[in-house]
Image (cartoon, rainbow over the protein chains, first blue to last red):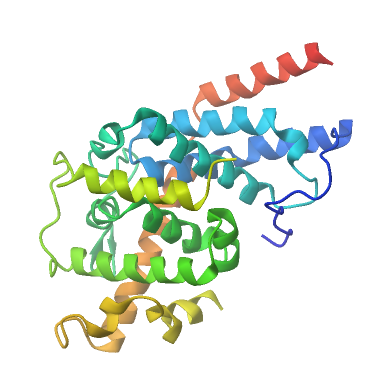
Length: 210
Length: 75
């Protein structure tokens, strides 16, 4: 968290890593697997899709390792790759049916638990209703990253992250309080997958996969 | 500091629905609202942590080892 963010534009030409740097990089990848899985699961919902995404991210990261500048924030760098993979996979598939059909947030390990009268499975089903860009803004800022870092990861302005978080929180609040319609059951599909696709398409143009 | 940002006035920037939509119906008492917002953040954090603390499936380690092996033979 206190390491500087890798720059989006590389002014220095990438150079091959030294042996030591490479070793540290690989060790870093191993350590980041749990958070990559968690970020992927937050975006995809489904466990198997999310794990595929996390694995693709690791493979991409290794291929592109010379573009990583040692000493900068590896987690942020990996999250950029993960979300680019996520968005380009979506585009390739030309449908979000797979993801959209995810039955709410799958979490075999999650016990029903109360949080100040907020049921976690209700919350996650509500969360799954949000557009992708709002999901990622919420998840990134829920503890892993600052607003500035989240903005750098998503390639957008800090104000954009703030307003996405704000809208997402309002929406979640209405959903979990039942003010704004009823939460879908776990097996129900989102009302309008096409909307989700356009949301998703917009994010792609905002930050072209690199 | 992050909490201050979340709960401060900047929250409403760029979101017209916050100020103009449905007056009255969406303004719970500030304390309840804050508690709910906090619960949402904690809940999301809890979800994230619950996934991150799952044992890493074997295929991840297999993948990293496979790539390791490939790299060694490249060198």
